Amino acid sequence: MTLANRLFGGTRLLLCATGFLGTLSVSAQTGSDESAAARVLNASAYSIRASEELSAFVNTTAEAAIEEHCAGCHGTDLTGQLGVPDLTDYDWLWGITGFELNDGEPVMALQQTLLYGIRNMDCPDIADVSYYGGCADTRYSEMPGYAALGFDEQQLSDLVDYTLDLSGTEADAEAVARTAELRPLCTECHGENGEGYKPYGGPDLTDNVWLYGDDRATILDVITNGRLGACPPWGYELDAATIKSLAVYIWNKAQGY
Ligand code: HEC
Ligand code: HEC
Image 1 (spheres, rainbow, N blue to C red):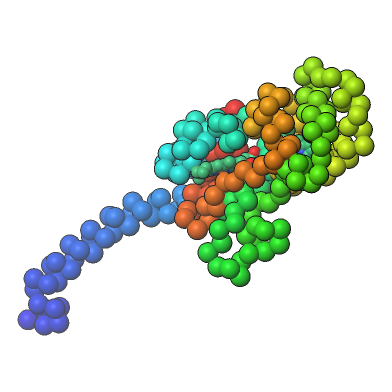
Image 2: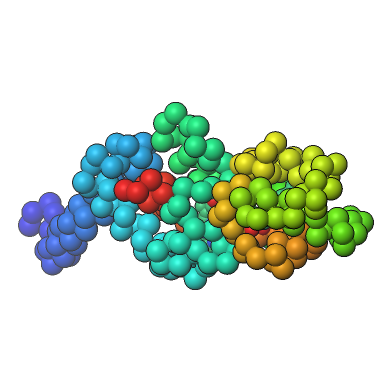
């Protein structure tokens, strides 16, 4: 009797060996996926684009996650709908200013949005609830409802003309002139000249791209009642390689890749 036979018995050893080989071939497969995932985590968007293997991993991973988690709101092609932004048009609400010098910053900004969400107020642990009413690290700001802040109908209507004028749409010049003293209120979140302010998610009001609609009634409703658009946080549900893949995929799409 050999040593192995004495220890395990012949059949068990055979089974054991097949089992081991089986595991080997499975781990060879997941092994390459795992290493692609690890390399995607460490690679810039630029070097991912330069690698066929990493691009394939990013596209497959992102498209599966989009179908399952994002398409319901943003659409399968990510072009959005009323109240949900188009993620492919390089018109950003949060973080990305267009003045970044490399791919790293915008991909990080997108990852923050994806990990912690926008206006997430549903924290799993109450200790996570931080200032401003949002969960820790979520993107947070409020488009105020100016009726509740005591603005009268005339002021609200004048602000609609001011907004239309900013976007290059015809507006009542006298109404716009009457907003001179109110306008500084808007700059905190919409920028000095209405060009948007990315740290607060304040949309650019000059570009004629609308999250909620370009008609007078909608704009009046936004200014009168405010808005609190929300995107869920994905850091609890999706692993790091999927979050990175989504960020790179969105960044690529927005640049026309
Ligand atoms: C329940 C609807 C909903 C789902 C599901 C959803 N989003 Fe969003 N998302 C939104 C809304 C609404 C906004 C705009 C929030 C605001 O007003 O600032 C947004 C904003 C974003 C932004 C910020 C865009 C910018 O211009 O800064 C990104 C990035 C984003 N979503 C990615 C995703 C991804 C990726 C998924 C899937 C993993 C996803 N979202 C799923 C509703 C959703
Ligand atoms: C404290 C920050 C803040 C201030 C102050 C503020 N806004 Fe906003 N505004 C926002 C945010 C954030 C949004 C986007 C809301 C969302 O994502 O749900 C927004 C959205 C809007 C929109 C809708 C834009 C679109 O694309 O549909 C209009 C119009 C607007 N604001 C006008 C104004 C005007 C006019 C003022 C000044 C009287 C003002 N806002 C002051 C933060 C602010």
